[in-house]
Every structure is written in structure tokens, then in C-alpha cells.
Length: 333
Ligand SMILES: [Zn+2]
Ligand SMILES: [Zn+2]
Ligand SMILES: [Zn+2]
Image (tube, rainbow, N blue to C red; front, side, top):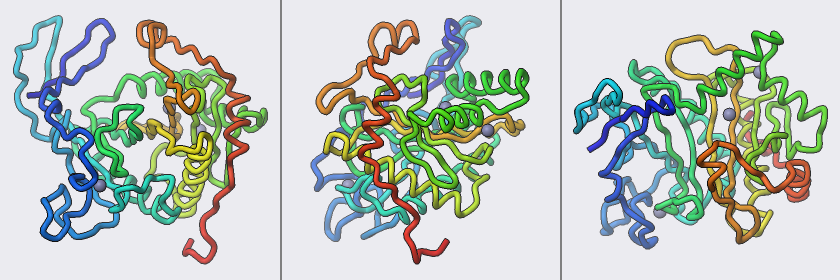
């Protein structure tokens, strides 16, 4: 059913997960498997009449805690291993038509607490080396269920993208004695043209080197490595800044803006990564209201992205839609 196959050409694992072909594809709203179960209605993934935020294991996982033995035998050139890991689904709200952008800051704060909790719990598994929290939003990037939700993959290895960031962060530290992400944040603040929004604890910017027109990174102002390192005020400030960005995204083309959102934090393999720095990256696939950016030959075949926009201009455009949202007054800090 599923296994990890080694790609010796790139030095990375590929997961096969053929059972995922059977998963539910854009069901009508009445048959959403992520809605609460209605009285007398068909049973959904959540057998409750309502909920706040729910986390459960994906029914069509690419990684499982007790995976089947690989269906093929590995060779010296082509090792295989069981697809061990955890795939979880995180429901943001019981409201089928909501999105993270439409949820109140207090609900996003609650979600951050849930993420923190899942990060801590999944990291504790011996076989888990990296906890990856992400959201795919919108049909433009292949979402099969509209209900507002994100996912968590707990990998049995450090994924290649993270390996690269760790390697570059380590090399920068060796060379300068400083943190790479702290330096990036400092440079973005000094320049200022690419900053989209900021508060006491986090800053959002389109990085100098953005691959996507509206790619935004949110970095913590403090040099910290993971969700579990933040205090309550920082969690609340992160919720407020995420809401600020997501609302501006929706205003940009007056549509519910599609994106991939990924959280980059330290691995969970027990090693010290004090040279790394927590950040969230958003990759929206749109270039204009109706045009998508495709990952074509250069991007896919050579790994070189061609961004036909300037980060400085796109940041100014996005910033013009920003209304700074803060932690609601009167809400407990
Ligand atoms: Zn639903
Ligand atoms: Zn740092
Ligand atoms: Zn990153």
C-alpha cells in the first residue's frame, strides 16, 4: 500500500501512497466529511454535533505509525523502508464555509496552541525526526476538501528543504557568528520596502529572494527555534499578525486567496539546532486574480525559480491592503 523509495540521484525519499487515489474529492457541502455529524445525517469524521478545533489521524495517510512492510524488495541502489510517520488533519472550525482569514484572532491563537501541543506530542515519538505543520488552501493548489483545515506530517527523517535551510544556517553561523534568519530579518527591517506588517513579536515580509509573487515569510523577532519556545504574548501576537496578513491576502483580488502555508522550525531528532530560527512561509500560486504561476521547466527541472515580479513592488501592493489587527482589547493576555 505504501512505502518509502530512495532516490539516489537526489539523495531523498519518495513516498508511494496508492490508496490515496480513493480519497474523497470535492464532495457537496451536505456530504463534507469534516463537518460535525448532523442529527440523523451521515456520520462524518467527527461524531459530535459540534466542535471547536479537532485533530485526528488522516484516513488516507502517506505515513503511518505502524506501516505495512514495503510491497517491493529494496536493492543496494534502491533501498526501501516502511512509510513510518504520522499524518494528522487539523479542523480549524466547525463552520464549513469559514477560512483561517475569517476566523477571529482568538481562534487563530487557539489553533497555535493546538499546533504547539501537537508539535510537542509528535516530537516525543522515537521514530519522528521532523514535525511539519502546513495548510494547502484553495482548488488552485489541488485541495480536495473545502472545509477549513490544515495538516501535520511527522516524518521519520529531516525533509530535504529543511536540510538545506539548516545547512545554510549552520554555515552562516560558522562564518559570521550570527543567525542567518536574524540577519535576514534585520536586513528586511533596515531596507523596509518589503515589510508587509509587523508587531512586537513577529514581522511579515516578502523576502528579497522570493520565488512567488506574493510569497510572505513571518519570522519571530526573538531568536527561537520552535512553537514550544514562545510565551503566551508571542502566541497571541503571531495570531494577530497571521490574521492581518490573511485578511490583506483576501482583499488583494477580492477573493478567498489560495496559498500553501508551511511552518519551518527545528527538527525533532534530539539534536541541538540553536543556530536555526522559527518562521512561517506562504506560497500563493496566483500571479493575478485569474493567472496562476506554474512550476514549469526551469522551476521543476532545474530548481531555479523565475519570478517575473519585484518583491519590492508586490510588498507595496500587499501593504496597501493591510489593516493592522491586534490582540483584541479586553481579551485576556
Ligand atoms: Zn465541512
Ligand atoms: Zn535567529
Ligand atoms: Zn524556511
